[in-house]
Image (cartoon, rainbow over all chains, first blue to last red; front, side, top):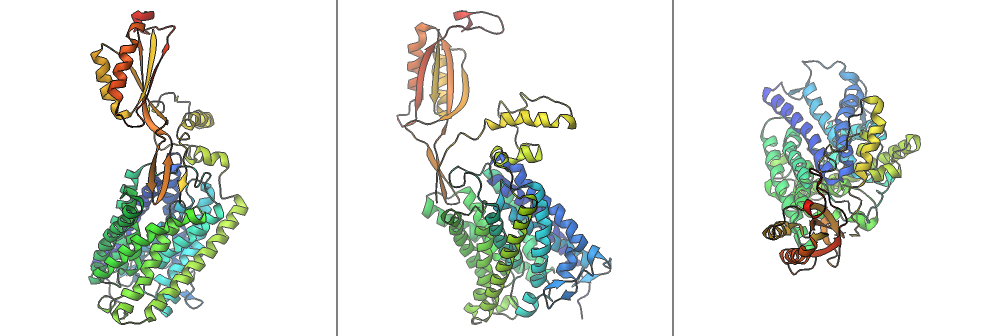
Length: 451
Length: 112
């Protein structure tokens, strides 16, 4: 018998959906602060646009592909609920209205898509990105969400992999896809030669803080009920974020000599990524281990791009991919029957059974996401081009793509030398004037990079 | 007349200003600059990637003065901006042909 409507569950899942929504501007600021000032707005726009595009495709058919009646043995949902057809105020999913559940899951689809943008910072055509977002959500996110988040999906329903909040669907998926995307678009001009230092670490801290805040909804909301499991996930989320900070900083202090602000925020994200799948399977001491190991592993993983020469610019694979793998696999070791109710990991006498189920999901989701993303990105690149011109990339995307600049500070850019030249018809001249001013900035620092 | 230009460490500006004020200098121009000399720059580390930053921030202080005052002012600037560590900067002077105070139109030493 399906559970009856619960007001408490509904309230919590609605609040959680809004918390996850806040992670998207949070991610925008986290990423935006890490890029150079000349393309900061483009970075924000890549995240914000996901909220818009993914919402529309979710309404039209995405929800139905992910959570519609199962087809092909747990592979995909049918289009029965396209346009949210037949779903009304009385329709329930579990103990919450289906539209509340669909809102919560929509935010997951949007933030996961936005995560990918970090791998191609400073060099993607905006229109091509919008096309990619719709195509990627359709061919990659919705099927994997069906496999893992829908009880009829083959990973959740047949393989019985444990993944409460999306270590596979969100983290490994975005990490593998981000890696493929970075390989298709190629390196930024000046990668490993020019300093590409974060232009605003305070923005990174603000964005990372919003992510952490939203992650309580992301993880504890994934219980889809207001109760003990949500409470465990909530507490575990806090513990793992904290352990991630300490893990990352310990590596940095020992390896590089300084505990950095960027390292603290990156470590928090790594720990939170790690606990995402595991927050409903491990106890709080387990969360401490998961968070710390994710922080340590990711702090090393972000250096791999310099060694192997791929430009995963903001470390989507290094943090989300690696952190997601750490968390998803550790469930197979640290899952406690006191939390899961049944499944036990290796450390609690469960043998290798659960670890095997976790590993298979990691491999299949990672391989599917990498392959499909590579094909979609290649297709878009052939069709309309995915990368901006060399000159546009060097000048920065903000002025050329969006007609705006992120900052108007400093004596010779603070309004001085700018004229109001009318509206749309003079737009092109105005852009040209401003560009000359902007080009005097930022190009003078030369640097080299040590992997 | 002479134009004295000093490129100094940014945190030494207050000391230089105070030293010049005690010698009766009533005006100067300060601008942000970046450069390198024997100091060579510094390194910064982001997510484990170490960047060698060649150009470091400096301030450029400019003062116009009478020929007779130039040595005293340069000595004062040098004394005030010295830390003894590498990267303290440079001070130099060049002859000035024309000087006009924009508000009054005064020319030459009267405009200093």
